[in-house]
Amino acid sequence: MDTSVSSQLDSSLQDSATGGEENLSDSNGSPSSSPQVSLETESTVTVVQLPDGQTLPIQRVIQAPQTSVIQAPQVQNVQITPEIKLDGEQSVADTQKRREILSRRPSYRKILNELSSDSPAVAKIEEETAEDEVPASSSPSISVPNSIYQSSSGQYIAVTQDRGIPLTSPAVEALHGVQTLTVTNSPTSQPTATFLQAGESPQQFYIHGGQVLIQAATGDIPAYQLRSPNSSLAQSIVLAESPSNMQSPSSQHAEEITRKREVRLMKNREAARECRRKKKEYVKCLENRVAVLENQNKTLIEELKALKDIYCHKAE
DNA sequence: TTCTCTTCGCGTCACGTAAA
DNA sequence: TTTACGTGACGCGAAGAGAA
Image (cartoon, rainbow, N blue to C red; front, side, top):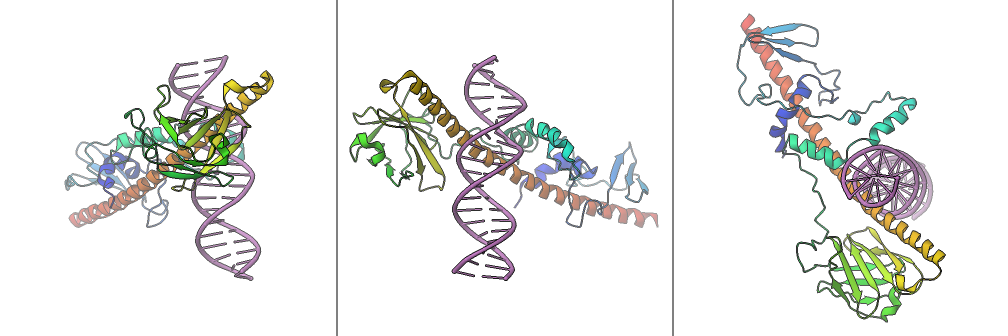
């Protein structure tokens, strides 16, 4: 199942063999109950230190086969960020310090990518989530997801694959019922952004990453929630007035502030979603790593047992 | 069936960091 | 210095599980 085991053995060997920073719970019991063994290799003699303080000098009795986890040819240092270590004895007084540490922790993408550079079996987090975003920059044709969205007031907006978007929504009353929106690719837009123009209507629909920003010519600035049938995620529509139809400068300023705030919230919403996704991936990766290290620990213990048996057998 | 608890995901705020 | 971004923390609601 886990093909990453062998590739990760080398990199994480030091940690488990020397009782490194990671506090792993073995399947046999707690780390304190499992034997702690340190190996010191000199030129020809290997000193095996047992948990009871006893040391066993082994003079090259056997050569561990190449597959042995002890004979790791290229041991790499695995960066274990100390922030990951959870210390149950942390006092309340250290909360602030801990917060500082946590806030300076590199992003999950960075951590995972570092891990993956140590061991290629660890999947990298892609720079961008390409699964649900439209590669507008790579291709002039834009594929709009075939989705039906529902606003918070129960209105439906259908997005069809032939780039037309028939709308039957009072939310866009200026469109007078069913209209088709043509998709235009703004040269200045972001790669994943799409502008929609509603026929001859001055209304512009700005679609980015599942979010729709509607520029309305008239009316208030209601906020709508969109629901994609493919996901349960509620997505918001922000209606922003076009600059051609402004009232007093003060209200214009207020609306500008409101619009900026809505855009910021929308972006932050997306960012939070992405951050959670990365965090989940990161946690999954750590869990895999724990499993691998536990496995290694087990193997090392068995190997040590075998070595002891051989040694005792020879000593007799 | 109803209530309670737990888990999960979301949106928002606050803050730190890196880039412009 | 400003801006954009990433992320921890917090609160909320929905969904599921278990008990009464």
